[in-house]
Amino acid sequence: MRTRVEIMNDFLAINVEPGKTIQDIVEASGSALPFGCRDGECGTCAVSIEQGMEYLSPVTPKEVKVVKEVLVGTGFTTEKIRLSCQMKVDKPNGLIRIKY
Image 1 (cartoon, rainbow, N blue to C red):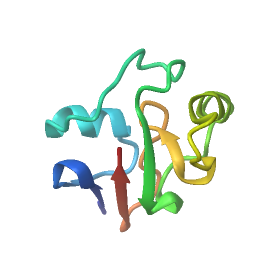
Image 2 (image 1 turned 90 degrees about the horizontal axis):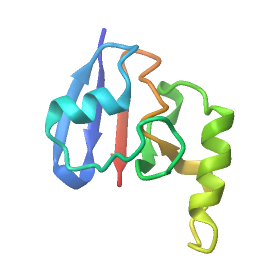
Image 3 (image 1 turned 180 degrees about the horizontal axis):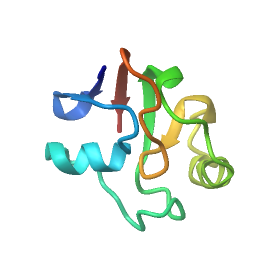
Image 4 (image 1 turned 30 degrees about the vertical axis):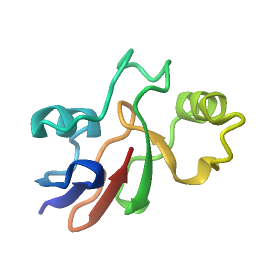
């Protein structure tokens, strides 16, 4: 069973098997979502999960630290922000909507 991942800025929708990283999905789809270090250290790939957080892997301690640093002074909250290089599609039969 697959989960639909929509990258809203690029008007892209991809059906993927659980276990795929969002980074892999983005790179395979041709999305313009930027990546920097690809290791969860820089925060370049921070995205907002508009729908479907429950279909993603749990937030890592590295994500918590970096997202807090990236969002300082922006007015955004951390509850919807994830690092696309760190998260994976974790469950089937869902819809994940991402905005960057």
